[in-house]
Image 1: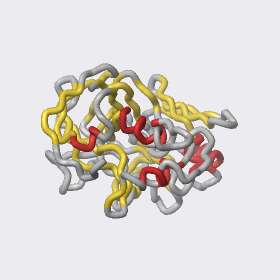
Image 2 (image 1 turned 90 degrees about the horizontal axis):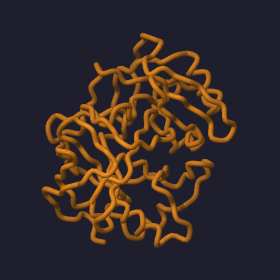
Image 3 (image 1 turned 45 degrees about the vertical axis):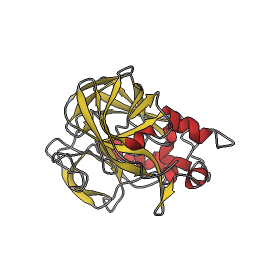
Length: 272
């Protein structure tokens, strides 16, 4: 098995960036989900409620995030160093943490693009968010992800799903960080400990999927698929699973083409 695709998502719930290599930090890939949009109550915004967020594509050029609208082509450049020094308490699910406001210019632009009053915030290094102690390996932390630093999906798993669909879906529906070639469908389910480029990774929890998987990332249109089909063979205890949440045990660089060596496996939670 080899790493075949790598992705980062600098601004939570906006379009991701395909990269050829990614640097691992203490809380996941560098720049991954270090920014997010919040509403007037300081709660995070997500495509679950606002599918139009899919139309905002993020690129990383030098020391700037360049965000552009996929349809009207409007764009904005945002320095990776926030202009504001003001800190606020904002929320991601049940987590509340101190985040840094970025700029009033960015706030106005995103509010206009999404037709929602919102602000852009950044997670500084001083803000620590711990992974659930039930799944933590060694006091692990994460960024503004839904809960874990990394998400792993095998190409064979997507191929299996697409073979059951009348219209195939691309990998961007599932927002992975690491995609790998080789192996059997849903082999990631059993990967308890694996190594890439000398770094150990731990598959700690299958990823329960939500309605974001039904949103076309180029048009923001919603459909019933692929959740409807996944529910027919990947559902357990009212959750539909696709991909594995992963914690890492070190820092370094991961590259497309790196070999994945499985060290320890675990029993399948879902029999397929």
